[in-house]
Image 1 (tube, rainbow, N blue to C red):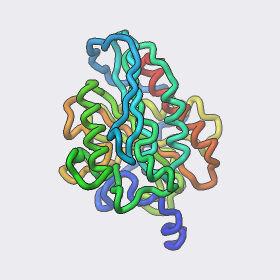
Image 2: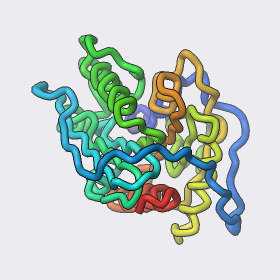
Image 3: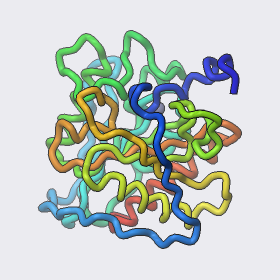
Image 4: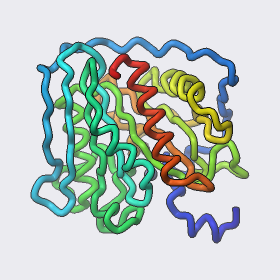
Length: 282
Ligand SMILES: [Zn+2]
């Protein structure tokens, strides 16, 4: 891909981590006939009373967005699904809209389907004025940057509801398995594990399970293993566990290159459903 093409297709850049920290090292591609490794055991927390909570984050502002919380009333995992962190990744927020209709049978499911509504309305990744939500964790509730305030609201919700897994849905440009060079433009069809000792194990297990359901070979997922350990520089969603104990962070990317939006949404939904089913939440 030319430099010009990279610049034009600007969604992909800087998706995951600081550009100086995510190159090199090996990729783990599970063999296609692999059986899913067992996910690490998740400690069971006391269930919240059964019920649904709807609220707005940053209420009364232009950036106000919906948080939906569904408590099954049955002990189980607490998972937060994020969509729409970047406004030009429609396959991700359309999938999150669907996830926001699901009713978990155990644990609690939180969904923020459209985290950056102003960027979505403008169909841009974000703007300078808004700030990049995926570079601003843990955020600051008093910041002039709206997305820094949103990051703080998200971290606050994670703490309030004792979230155990943050599952953040995005889109990149090229497919990771087809990349011609290292770089953040090439993260399509990947699952990345961030903070949480078990994050990489979870990423690998999810990839194996999901790929058993993805019949088109090009569309299959890859677990990225070269994501660096959390550092003080890490301000994307993979590092939220730096600020919250016992939190596993996963980031899922679909590639926009030669993959229609409807298919990206379909695959995001498939992978999210696979993850929640693996936790007996669906
Ligand atoms: Zn993104």
